[in-house]
Length: 136
Image (tube, rainbow, N blue to C red):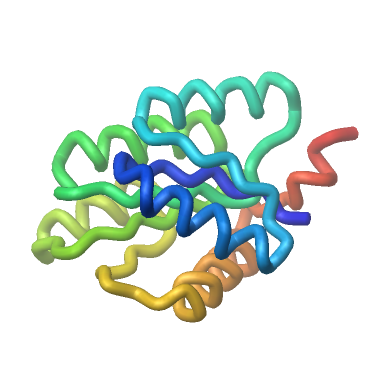
């Protein structure tokens, strides 16, 4: 079972993500703030139970978002990070990718596309180690 950390300030979207990812047998850890997400990630790393992927749904994507992604990347080299947003200018997208984001999806996006891109990000990430293997 894959483990996903989902960060979204909209409670209704968190519930929708949680329901959808559970149908494809993901262990879902939903949080509504970046701060909570960082705490969950740090706890997981110290407990050697890292996430398979981190999904950040943030409006708007700003320079602050790139700093968060950069911090997450430094904390967890083996976890792909995917960001969703309604709009993003080209320069911000470049900064986001340079900060360590593996993929970006523009909303609205259907669950099939989101799931496919997340699976691709996990499989294509060069440092990926399944969360189950980090438990030993």
